[in-house]
Image (cartoon, rainbow, N blue to C red):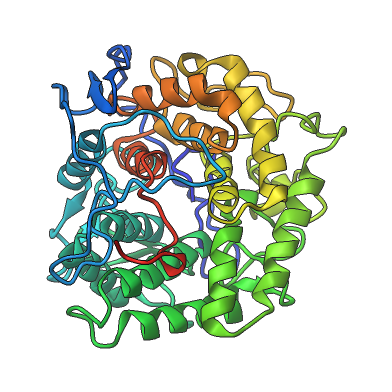
Length: 445
């Protein structure tokens, strides 16, 4: 689920369709200053002016050896044979993580555990929590090796289960009310992936009641049983959606490969196939996006933009705060698995965004590529970060990748709201620095 005011809640209303009230990106989010000048490098050592500020010479690089019951300690810095990476500082990632944690993680209203709050997002209750935020937090925690945070977020998630055993999507800040019911499939699949990574990261069960692996398998099963249409298509939630109601930014094909393997359910490969089929169909002459990769926020499985995906007929169909995540999710499948369909897709988005230039990327586009910014006065890490991650697919885009990394590492691209843009700052920097990995395919150092 995106955080834009024209972004659908990634969950269902009690009647089995999305509620009318929609999440909103924070127009009061901090406007970014100009990037601080990028990075300077000497030999193998990196000296950067982004992120936390000062310079670090001869900063240690990963992969950090396994130690103290952590198999993939930060940093790992594992380069992909398929993808190109910028010159970087792990201190930038750590600074982004520390800021995200300080600004969004709280024990208030968390039932004795921890949650990720949305502090500056007009249109939603102040400091409320969405399941998407818990999922992002679990992803960040497992890659940063923060087991206590990971466990506390999952325990909070368990307080708010719906009838299918998945988290209701929208919870009040005081921890007393369900403000939106029904699960959100993008959040649920991110949680499942994070749990799989937790099994490989720490093993065992930490402070949970069952092992990370068993919980992951159960989560994967529930997603498949309640959020997959006809064994093929990812729905937006467990109580609504189908062939006419699709959000392409929810597709996570790299996950589905791992889900099939760990669950023994090979039908996940059909979900993967349908994801790429739908993605391809959404890029066409009628939509005027055949060459730029700008997927509609909501469409049918045939790629036809569908404002009727919401009950009130106002579902966004342009490239907005949901859609902007697509190059990240699809780019993962090329970097991690060498999937040619992923490479073909991100080649389009990368050519488009590199042609615009990092500092000119706005927070919204019509499908034909014309700018349609939602907010003025700054940039959104949710747009810049995933666009740059997609560009990792080709060394041709290295100048764009480096410029994008340096801009995101300023930690100031927050026009879309502190919660959403800070989350995508950390996730993007993790991927760009070789730390957002498929642990199931790796051996600890």
